[in-house]
Length: 266
Image (cartoon, rainbow, N blue to C red; front, side):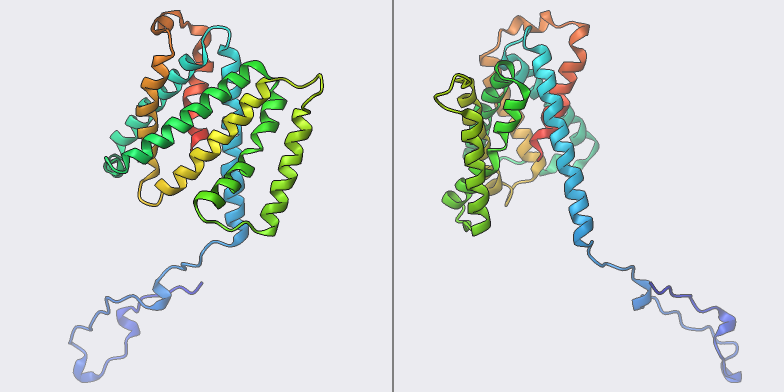
C-alpha cells in the first residue's frame, strides 16, 4: 500500500513574490490517503465461516450435555423455560448497552414471527426429549438430516433450484438416515423418529427465518422467539420447579441459557 506524506511548508517551492503569502491547504484526500477496501479473500471468508460454525457446533454439544445433566430433575418444558428466560436476560442486557439493537426490535410481520416460533418450539421439545432418550451419537447423526430437509423445503417454498450437487448430497443424506434408523431391525428405537421430526421442524423454522431476515433484524427475531416461546414452555412446566433448583445445577442451567441462545444463531 502506498502512503501519502503531507507536504511540509519548506517542501513547497515559492516564488519571491509569494514568499509571505499563506499556502493553500488541500483538504480532499488523494487516492493514496484512502485505506485499501479490498474485500476479504475467499480463504478468509471460509476461515471465519468455519470458526462460526465450529462455535455453533460447540454450543449444540454444550446444550446437549446440559440437558442430559438436568434430565433427572426437570422435564423438557422446564429446561426450555430456563433457556428462554436466560436468553431474554442476555438479550435485554445487550439491548441496554446498544441502542441500535434496541431500536431494531419492531412489531412487524408478527404472523410469520408467530409461525416461526411455534415451529421452532416443536423442534426444541422434540430435540430435548431425544437427548434424554437416545445416545448422543444417534442424536447428532440424525441432526445431519437438517440440511437435507432445508434443501427440500427451500426448493418447495423459496423457489430455489435443486442442482445436481444438491440432489446428490440429498440422496447421500437420506441413505445415511436409513442406515442409522435401520427400520425393522432390533436396534431401531421409536425415539429416533422423534429426532427426525425435530430435524424437519428445525429445517422449517430455518426456511421461515430466511424469509423473515429479509426485513427483520436478527436481534429482533431472537427477542420475539424467546418472548413467544417462554409462555409456551411455562404451560408445560410445573411452576414450582424453581424451588427445586440448587447450586449443583448452576453450570448446566447456565449452559442451557447461553449455549441455547448461541446455537440458535447459526
